[in-house]
Length: 91
Image (cartoon, rainbow, N blue to C red; front, side):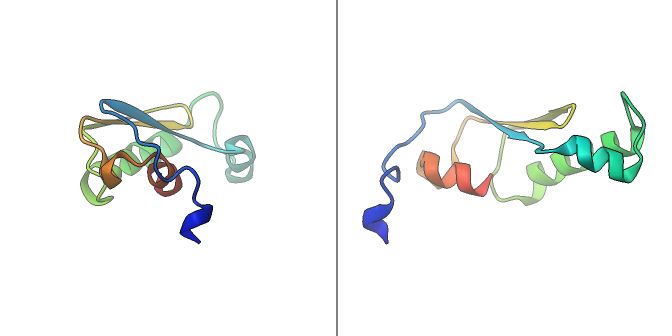
């Protein structure tokens, strides 16, 4: 299997931002009946997720912030020895 992991040797050099982008969140917001353009409940959930990523994910980002349906993580020390394939699959 490892011989098929063609990108496993690609590494990133810090500092790096990793962006976690919500996929089809418009459908989620409609299903939950959230207010547009801003919903306090959704916002608090995104902030809570940022806090959890900082404290409990094991990724150890230096900073996390949220805007709209995105969360960005800032790293000065990269997990997984900076292996892009691993960071991408876990994040």
